[in-house]
Length: 201
Image (cartoon, rainbow, N blue to C red; front, side):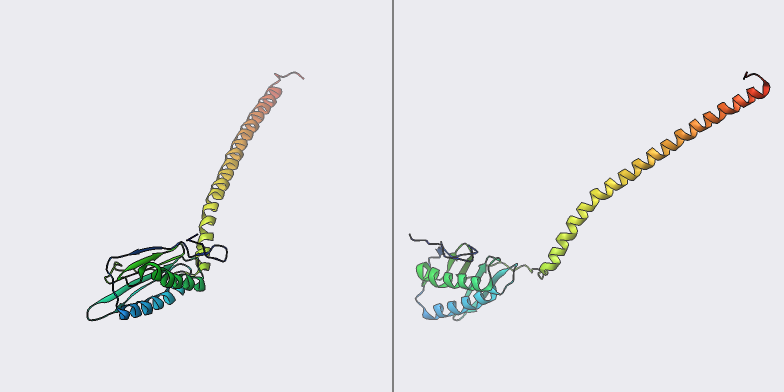
């Protein structure tokens, strides 16, 4: 079996299968390989400490004269610092040795990390990311938003009940008052008839 999945911590880190894509330019220059190793090592360390939201680093290094080497590395954000380092190390060693050795550009892709290097800039101007908020701040926002959405139906239901009770109370009071007024009028008429002698006892 050629591609074996190398697992750590219940499938959080998956290094294989690795896919390599390389450009057609090649070089036998040892200085190129040395600068590539240094650049990838530096970027690997930066990406690994990137935090829980973004494990990514890009950079470039001078070669000779006006030529530069550009690279980027990236891990999935669920990886620990150690797992990210390990994944990128395997991509840089096994992946490059297997299919990109002496190439002037290559991509090594695996499920948990990837790297790319070229002799031309391939990353567009980087958008500035806002500083990551603390997980507790995100959690607090998440807790506030559901509470707001939970409060709305409760408020509507409470107001509906209060309005319903008010309508029933006012209606009941008006009916009671009307009957009370009719009873009072009837008693007054009977009393008047009694005084006038119209009612026989």
